[in-house]
Picture 1 (cartoon, protein in one colour):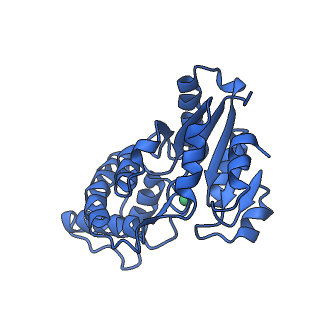
Picture 2 (cartoon, protein in one colour):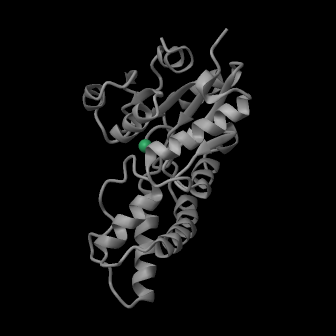
Picture 3 (cartoon, helix red, strand yellow):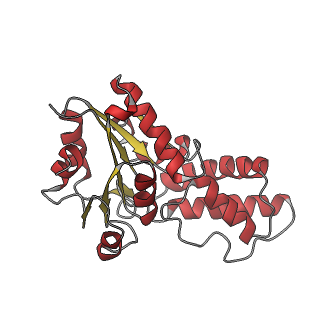
Length: 237
Ligand SMILES: [Mg+2]
């Protein structure tokens, strides 16, 4: 019998690529804030790599770069503004730029068919942003729960929140469950390690496979089309 298993999939660079929709939305939110406080954000503000970062951490750094002082209330406000902008950016994204990554549907089908598996998200996106991004490509209904960027700014804490929810869904204590983080960056690997979870790293984001391998995730693949991916995720072999 398979050990009860909680799967936590990252979104950006793992399930989908958005062609920069998220970055454009953050930029719009920073500009709207700049207009309101009569300050033009520095041209390069918010243009750093968002890979593996949580939405709140992105907004915090973007605000600092733009010349603002990120209080918690201001971050809340900017995240809301970002989400409104994200809805527009997602809707207008061209299909070739905003798409599901190779192998994703097949892997999700295999995971959904297996008993004793809770299929969830482990993402830096806040829950509303995660839903928005996944609904656009018809993937939102695949995931019953998640750990999100609104649970914690720290990635290890948000995947822990997801693991707790997944175990509750399975009706098992967390200690009885195998937890697997599937993600595309060093931050996914670090978060998995921090909570004692397995990690399946996939090089469909900005970080090369060789770099991911150096961090010793449980498994690493070029993409999710590899024949060995399903066994790695579901059986740990
Ligand atoms: Mg990612």
